[in-house]
Image 1 (spheres, rainbow, N blue to C red):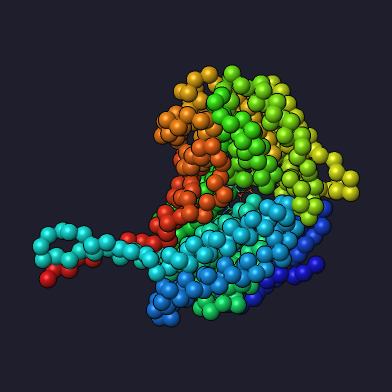
Image 2 (image 1 turned 180 degrees about the vertical axis):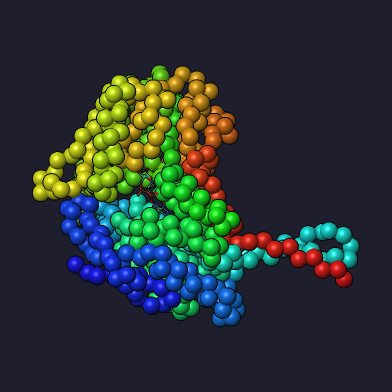
Length: 480
Ligand code: NAD
């Protein structure tokens, strides 16, 4: 069992109290490492380091193109060690190795993408009146904080810290307590580059200690958070005390809308993939299936048939579906199943623990398809975060739109139809940050702005849009 350290101001440190906690393999319960239990004082030290570095002449005069070159090196280092890093992610999260490899590749893409942007952050000149030269400057916002969830630990820390550093900010990041190992690996990679010490800082710790200390810190200039609505709201309240901006990405209850003229084989394939990916522990999981009544029965039969072919095992076995992250999440899924039964659900497949010989301590849950619930029921409305899809039917296009928009969330929607005009008509009426027509996810889409409507959050990550989170606009007017 390896003892890990945090990374603050270019130094590897234990927490100031010396306390630690364990991170475990969810497939076996095996303890993987001990990690420092950072608290408020550790956060203070990291924010202080990030502030001092942000204001230093070295960083203020650091050429943007050099920032980009360093981010490129991080991308190369991630790719060079892809097997080792994917293994670490698989052990810590439980996800199949192939999915973990894709995560490392996506992380490298984030660094590559934002590396190219570092010297392309433009302001504007604005025609005010003759004799006045008016222009805007898009400046770095300062010390940026990044509170990371456990479902895509490396991808999510990469997507926001790459954008923040590309735009000239400094960073204090906190990985989720369940999955800190690849974030520590990322700090090791930064440590081997020429990035000035104190630009990238990593504090490990619990949400209620280190996380809330970050949210309430008066010297943090922006907070990026991905996780639950409840915690996102707490982060926002902490930030509000100091009038700090936040970017919140808070999950969803995303539907696939399947019209009867679609390519059914393709749609079935993606409906299943979109809920099986990472054992359904994905903010953009396709957790609701809305099928046109005319094809409902045959379509559901095909979905169930496909779900029954899903192979379940530990991440290292590299099958289709790994374990749920931890006992808390596992129990939460069973609570949802209990409520579904009370609400009159029909389980077309799944709904139980998957017993796996030799992995009796693993949190394996069967791929599950539920029918017969009211669209207003608790299970149909709330994010389950497991491999569970609930099915509903509609007759008209308007009913499909109403069902799709009928939750508090609005992150992603899939539309399956061969009628191009209908596809765009539906897309225009959907209240979600991303709409996919005849695909779902489009290969991850580092380049596509991503974020929510309604309780799925606000602000956009990914793409050029994310650069707005990490820059602040100044207008300068000169009379000549
Ligand atoms: P969470 O939102 O509590 O945790 C996410 C991150 O926030 C972690 O780094 C955690 O340490 C930190 N955190 C926790 N409490 C905090 C606080 N008071 N202040 C600041 N930071 C804090 O998520 P969870 O409890 O691990 O999971 C619960 C549910 O959240 C899941 O079942 C799922 O529905 C949802 N979730 C969504 C996403 C997503 O990608 N949108 C990711 C993880 C969890």
